[in-house]
Amino acid sequence: MNWKILSLLALAGLMGCALGLYLNGALLGAGPVTIALQVAAVMLWVWARFAFGVRSFHATANPTAGGLVTSGPYKYIRHPIYASILYFAWAGIAAHPSIVGVVLGLLASVFTAVRIVGEEKLLVQTYPEYVEYARATRRLVPFVL
Image: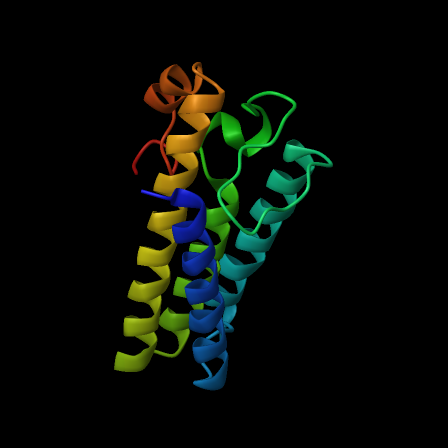
């Protein structure tokens, strides 16, 4: 299975879901709780980007050189950037519940899962220590999932 191509297709799907949520008025929070969740999601994303360093963004699943990052939010969850995207999207959906929003959120979650699985397959090949790291951390929600 070509995880790089699948992850590229999943990225396109994620972008389509974000656009769909925006067009349906379900992307941004409305009220203190959902706005606070989205602010926290953005802060998690920023923290993860700083912890990851100056490595570039790859549209496809592609482990970067420089070693496995296990500090910052990566100490608690393996995919804080993907987690922040899902937290942000689901907070917006919760603020503006609709069938379309839930379907787009589920699709975004599936596309994110495809990217995560692809990246993890490639990370194990590049960094054998990833297996032990994966046993000690959760994917998206600290101590839970």
